Length: 149
Image (cartoon, rainbow, N blue to C red):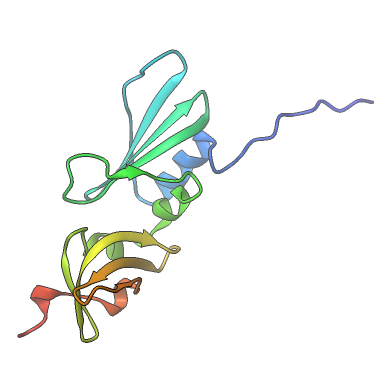
């Protein structure tokens, strides 16, 4: 008896898997315009976040992220990181925005990026006023206007 060989499927780029993860993470899914034969786009929206994922057939080939407060996607999102954003903690992801002034301990700075680590932790990339860069978790950061001066 011979077995039928099935093609390998990469679950990180497979459309039904991405749609399922998005649904479980509370993302609204809409279908974008079709640009050419077999190329489609999913638009994933949650709070003020938006992720655009391009597909050829059922396989994702590109993703772009639009951060809260922006009118256009900020840049390309690695497909390997897509799952992190889909599963990222909703409250922590919406607590800060790029360009926001924050305080970490005794240092002030500006949020440069927001990166989910997993379902419960979100990191901020902060450029401190003193010139350094740090990546604290959102639980260690306060918005500058929350701090009494």
